[in-house]
Image 1 (cartoon, rainbow, N blue to C red):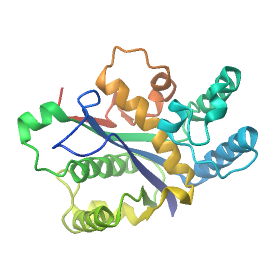
Image 2 (image 1 turned 90 degrees about the vertical axis):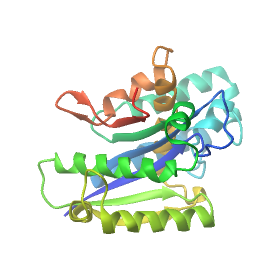
Image 3 (image 1 turned 30 degrees about the horizontal axis):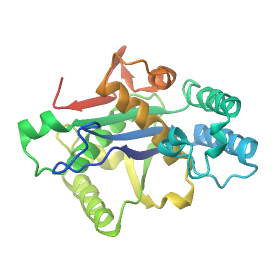
Length: 247
């Protein structure tokens, strides 16, 4: 049995009632990593942390990196910042290490079409799991197990998420029935940020450039250029990102 890990993080918030008009989007981003590739990825990130902080305790967080805060004040030094981004880009730009699947909700047009009452986190999770199943089905090796890992958000939200995941296992999604989903989905784990899970940090790092690209595909976005080849592609067509409503 070959193990694959689906790490899921978000960019923006899933609140449709009051949202930032300067950032009117919610993206749920997953990265799929095969077990042996996960070991490589974890080792590379550990070496990176040792190089810049002398320990492996620092948790990579996209917003803090961009703001040079909460442990990332060293990036105010432009030479350090340049070297740091070169190292991160080299890791995230390595081919065939991880695969991106994501769902983005464009809030303004979503509300016009569907209202404000839907659970867009749950809707996004359905798509991310569907695409993960499609990806695994397209691989040649047999006997694949998917272990989903999500960062905790709060007791109430986590309980709701567990319930929804179990409902998906029982009923399936629109495109993937229960039997197909259960064939791959073997575990679902919620972990706190302080658990320092490398896969969740990678999901966080790729979620922001993917989101920025969706908001404005014509805006220069070097980070997106680094990671875009890792987006799930099928028959030379990028199918790993869903935008709702469809644009």
